[in-house]
Image (cartoon, rainbow, N blue to C red; front, side, top):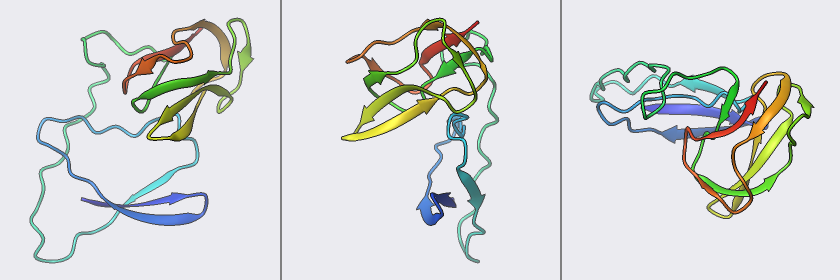
Length: 134
C-alpha cells in the first residue's frame, strides 16, 4: 500500500506493507500529520484490508483514555512533564531518541499528570504507557 504523508508542508510518498494479522494504528500523539491513501496503479496485486484496531494493547488489558502510550520504540532522552502539572493537548511530555533522532511525545488530552511511567535512559516499546493523567 502506498501512502502520501504531509509533514511540515512537505509531501512524502511511502510504501507500507501490512503483514496478515498485524494491527495498523496511526499514533494519536502526532497532532498535525495528514495521511492520505494513494490509489495503486492498475494491474497491482490487491492487498487484504488491515485488521481493525481492537482497542486493547498487547497483554489484553483495556485501553484507558487517560494513558499516553509511546507510538514508537526508542530510549527516553528527556522527561519534560512533571507529576501534578496541568497539560493541554499537544504539550510536550517526553522526548524519545530512536535511530539518532529525537521524537517529541505530546499529551493526547488536557489534564493533570498523575504518573510518569518512564525515566531517562529507559528503553520503551510501541504501545508502552508513558504517562497517566488524573
